[in-house]
Image 1 (cartoon, helix red, strand yellow):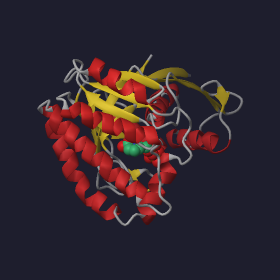
Image 2 (image 1 turned 90 degrees about the vertical axis):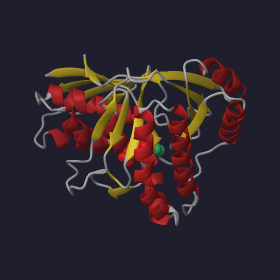
Image 3 (image 1 turned 60 degrees about the horizontal axis):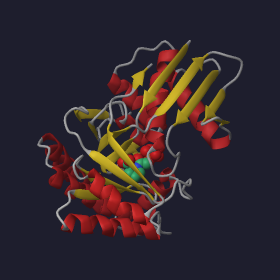
Length: 317
Ligand code: 2P0
């Protein structure tokens, strides 16, 4: 059978960084995200054929990428037939723009449908998580918490919607410092940090409080409260990265210039808060009214600026 799905990437407002179980992508901390449009991954799956073939952005996957997709499909059915996957992003891949989140959410939805499996969103989220942790948050639109869970098999560690995309009209302005594939994957950076940063324990114990703070801020649409906890979570995560051995340093000189520019905007009364992920790009949380001022202020520092809105759920076409 054939099926096609679309999913938007999400960015974390409170960050996932570190795992308590690497095989299952069970997180060391809970996290909160916002789903973003119009960035999206569109994935078509044909379940049954002559041999496995996985095409990502028009290029056949090989090596570790191929193995990662094959292993993911085996989770759906260990005695599956050969599968054809064709997946396309309308935004840069593996550059700290959360492409793995939309990729595995779209693949989970399309592949289970093509295999004739009907699954509830929570179970799709558990499946997507095993492809890439952050993907478990991209099944829903709007604002999502990824619960830590307590089960050793990970069945209770999945996305839980806080509210949908209609709840709050926000903008995320992406200051694109670089669209090149990063030198250290988020997976490797995360593992190295967890193994070697002396700050990692503090990161883990302070995480749940940040999630509670972000959930309350989202429910009450309090942007200052949300922006403040988002920046705090981001800087704590970066602190664990740069204190790893050797340091995981994703920031470039323009990254720091943008962070200062956002502080300057805020000192002038513009509502703008910054966040980063496993890459050099800065994402700025702001209002629709302040969007133009933020774009204008950041443009001189970076080659490209994207403006994103709160996106909807993953869906089958
Ligand atoms: C996040 N990031 O919460 C955090 C913040 C990057 C920094 O999730 O190993 O690709 O596949 O579970 O999800 C990026 O890591 O890692 C990420 P795996 P993933 O969005």
